[in-house]
Length: 66
Image (cartoon, rainbow, N blue to C red; front, side, top):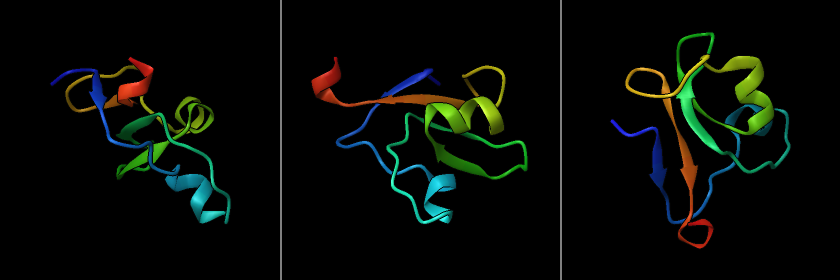
C-alpha cells in the first residue's frame, strides 16, 4: 500500500466533525482508539499512528495539489 493516495476532494476531519466543526482532512489512518478516521494534521499528531503505510494509514492529496 502506498503512503499517499489521490482523492477527488479532501473529506472533513472525522474528529472535528464530532465537535460540529469543518476542517479538511489530510490523512486516512488508524486512531489510537483502534478505528480508522479521516484526520487533519493536528488530529493526526494527537490521535494517529507514528508512521504511514500498510496497517497505519495514508496521506490524502487532490489532483490540483500534485
